[in-house]
Length: 311
Image (cartoon, rainbow, N blue to C red):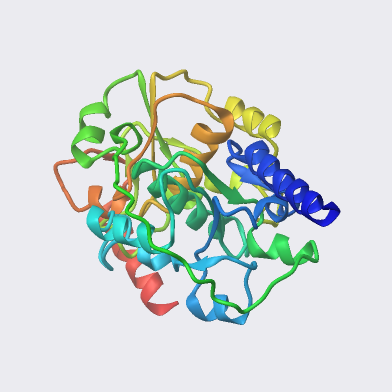
């Protein structure tokens, strides 16, 4: 009887812990460790399959980041919704699942993968979501267990319910460029914003007209992929975004860094009406009719290409 009571008590404790952290967008390694054995929790490891095979959080399923991305010419584009839905189902994720996304934790750019997958899951209609703050590096630094076992997962019949309030299309962004009540934020490092460097997926350097600079790296403890506290995030937002807005649209080159700015403002700071433009400048810059700023002269662009070619 005592053994049965202890088992039930332990199960209840795990369930309570899961509820306690269910609404938190960021989990510490200790918090995740306290709930990971709950059957309603699904840890999604988005690192490459080879890294997953070397060792992962016990019970985690593998879904490499590339599976959540679009074609090579614009990986920011969403894959077909039926493809994403099949992926979610195969991971054993249902409407009531608490999905926790885990990346490597290598650096702040790595965090963008977790943020992009988190955003994708939320766009598909899932609401009980978290990211492991600091990724697997933080988990390992905390001395927590890893194994090589691939868990057996029962596929679900999840049906996507798209949340259109989270996404911005090229046409929607174009319609808001001149709207003073809409804030466009460029999540790329400042050199990209200023047009001093260009991503391979962009046709020309520069940024979207009237955009403001909010580099994704601002949200992290220096030199780490550890996201700052909510209090610090609110300070960063207040200092970086003095202009009030009814709507915010985050973009970058391919919707990766932009996912971090979206996550910071929407999920941590708590701003309303924050959207992600997933195709970003890989799409926008290829349409000459769309307005841009900080675009270098043609001669300067040629020099930039030559410098890149000979570097």
